[in-house]
Image (cartoon, rainbow, N blue to C red; front, side, top):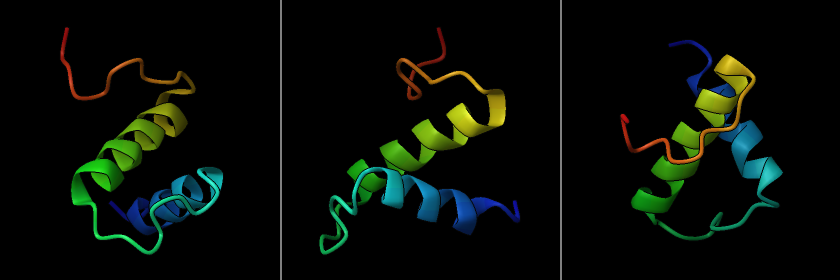
Length: 52
């Protein structure tokens, strides 16, 4: 998806650069998924790692 980098940068900026100096893939992946869903649907995901 061509928006991946853009979405990741937006989410990082939105979080105030939190975790920018860390290699915490679980957290960054969570937030990237959260904001990707939010920006894609216009609705913030309550829990993007669940399918219910």
